[in-house]
Length: 121
Image 1: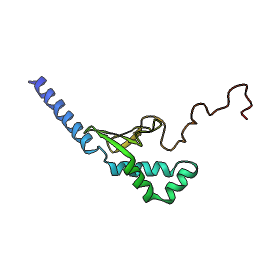
Image 2: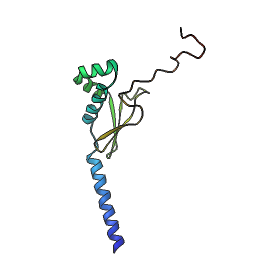
Image 3: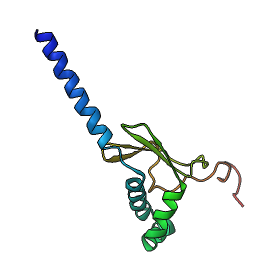
Image 4: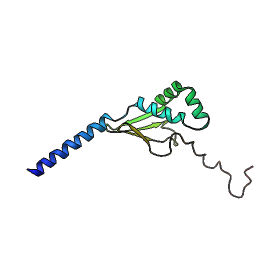
């Protein structure tokens, strides 16, 4: 009898966790607000323009983001055709970049750095 009771409690706890994750799966509007805040914190012109034009930033994010919804969590990618695009996990009302942060500048493209022994001119 005790084993059945423990199994029942574990199933109820699992059902509650799954329900909370499903409820906490953030939508595209939540992601747009998150991305806008991250872009406003970015250094240089990107942060300045994002702060100056929040409506345009939100519109850009909404029109250029692909959401893969898995029910309990979502994966977001702004400009999915860009290989530098960073996927972001949305789970339990939070967003976690799965790579370089959205507020960090992009790394320079390969081949743009001067080679060792060259003058760079």
